[in-house]
Amino acid sequence: MKYLWLCLVLFVLPLNAEIYRWQDESGRIIYSDQYHPDAEIVKVTKSTNYKPPVINNIPDEPETEEAPGYQVSILSPQEGEAIWANGIDGNLPVTVDLQPELNIEKGEKLLISLDGAIVGEPQSSTSFNVSIIERGAHTISVSLINEVGVTLATSQSINFQLHRASVQ
View 1 (cartoon, rainbow, N blue to C red):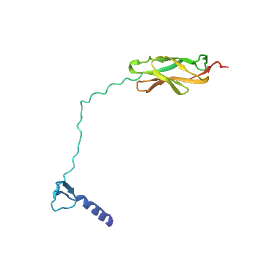
View 2: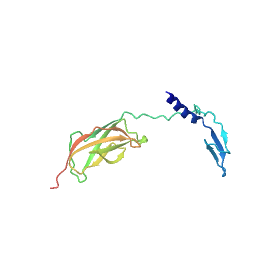
View 3: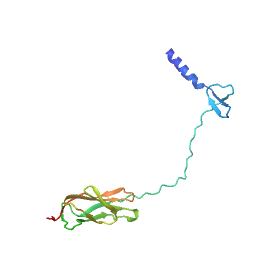
View 4: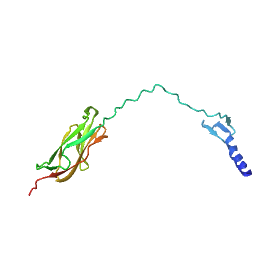
């Protein structure tokens, strides 16, 4: 216990050290806890606390409208449909139903994904023509996005078969 008190006294004594201030030959002001013959003792006062003022005239935050509960559904092609695309381009017509209607003023657009990859640019029409070259099973979905690309709603994925006449 004696040693504990001795350690406390040894550690507390340096906390009451004085601060000295003097000016060197080049005019710089120097502060130190070491004595210097030209130094004066600086009286340290209690540190001040700053409390920021309360500002009552903060303008209201702009009101943000919530996005309505969009329902996106693909009308064609239908689930499990077999489609014959015998033309050279292999265009697949896609028709989308969107409730409530697309808000073009807010920059909302529709984006098609075919087999997990985005096809074409976002557009404001609910009718698409998607160019598909390969025959076989495909999956398509449509997403509603806002002007910054955030997805607001997505349709269910539709699986369909694309048939093409053989060149032979």
